[in-house]
Length: 184
Length: 103
Image (cartoon, rainbow over all chains, first blue to last red; front, top):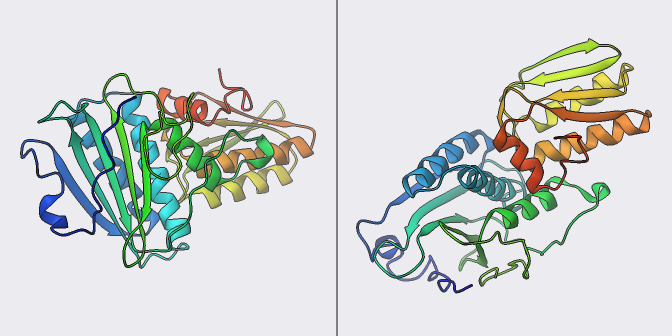
């Protein structure tokens, strides 16, 4: 699978103005909320709306909602250790509008909590099912690409991508995406 | 704090739990407590009826796994029924359809 290169670091120069700015007609949206599960319905509604606007229908749209919620849950649990005083930034960007790149959607999650190394998991036994590990597994199965990196100054940048046609899930067949790079 | 809304009934020796709304980490601890409390009272055959549920995540699935393990310790089981398509898909993603007897 040919994939777009990982997006530029979000903390680079001109972050706010240059994010997704190559095509002004491409959909972009951003929500910022505290690191509290209270805001999960907000995130679900935002992601569902954005997916619909980008042409995704169920079951893929629901899977994207699930993946983003799982990622946010991990931020709340692990990056902020359950403390609600942190902030979570959820950016959504429509892909492939003004170029030959594949159409799809990208969700970027930014936090300033503790950076936690992500480990690829390959299958689980029932005895091993725990919320965090299962969530990681589910994220990989719902997406085509996952990119995770620490942010300068602390925290994590997580980029999740799903393409509209042809893309397999990030956990099927080929090596699952761990940190950086396409899943295929 | 988000409350878990649910109905509980006992029929033919089985415990049927019927939650409502969207289930995520906000209500997972409460659901776990409900399962523990109800299983402690006797029934080991548990049905979790998800007909009113539009969304579940891994925290809920892990909670249900915990309930299943508890039920099995008592020689019983826990099944999930009446999943809406998106909820069924979540169990499928988790590869736990068979574990919970979901068709």
